[in-house]
Length: 158
Image 1 (cartoon, one colour):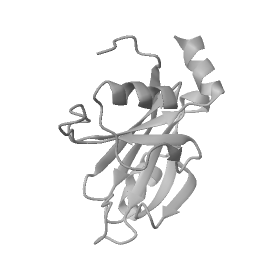
Image 2: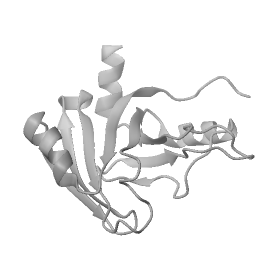
Image 3: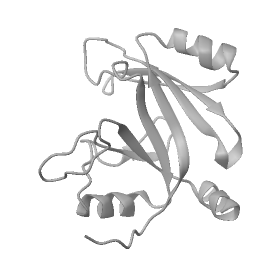
């Protein structure tokens, strides 16, 4: 195993919360906690209708994605696991995926692609297998390519 990790996890980019209806989620997160809705995302392929909220500011802003399924009978079932996934900023997504894969981490199908917020993303699988035994152990983890200003802000803060 190669221990010289060629990338850094910088911080939390997002948490994604699923429910049968995002309206109840918005009552808590938007009305009661005061997060602002900064966008929406809808994808038939990913079976998701979400409101993208934000807390914090600038490069340290954290998204809180409030998700409901377009069709509750289809997969992926974004509402079945209420804390759907955690997104982590990384400084070099392709290198991270290559290194983690070479070191036994299982990734979900789909590879690196554009995510709802416009950044390149990919998902670490919540369950390992024989070929890739390392996983999120029940938690879906999204790796998100940090833009240069976020990378610099974390470097300055560190």
